[in-house]
Image (cartoon, rainbow, N blue to C red; front, top):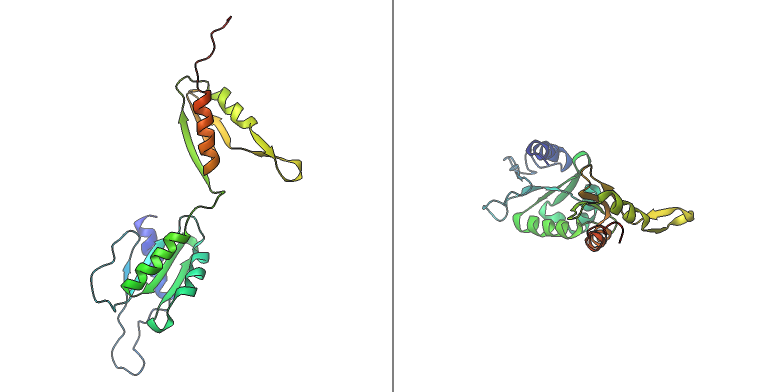
Length: 192
């Protein structure tokens, strides 16, 4: 996410988290506005009881699902809050530094690719023939629901005929890469 993207998300945090920016109940002083800590930034040194807003980017899971999951781990006595910014798939966590680290670790554990998460790989061939080998990978597949054929992976040759672009679930892409390595042999000499 660009720097401006998370800054905009942090601006939304004030409204989304309903941060305490007015006078505290029963006190004549203003509540402190929590410091916003962007993605990848270290949590700053400071008082252990100071509230922070951590901005996290969801990579695989939906931000709304992560925020909903984190709700179960919040301590309402500590003014902990979580919100999702849908447009940027960003999770905002308001808590004290030690709890931010804990909630951040939960997000890291939950925000993983699923078994069908697609990846793209480019395989360079030593002996060319990318068009031929891409077709061979395309033949691999299995019957899916309702008799429709389900692709093993999607494979396309590049124009130079020296690379195959493979798209599919990570495990299958790895298998396809292994298959290409075994098939990438010099073409048999004509007439033999």
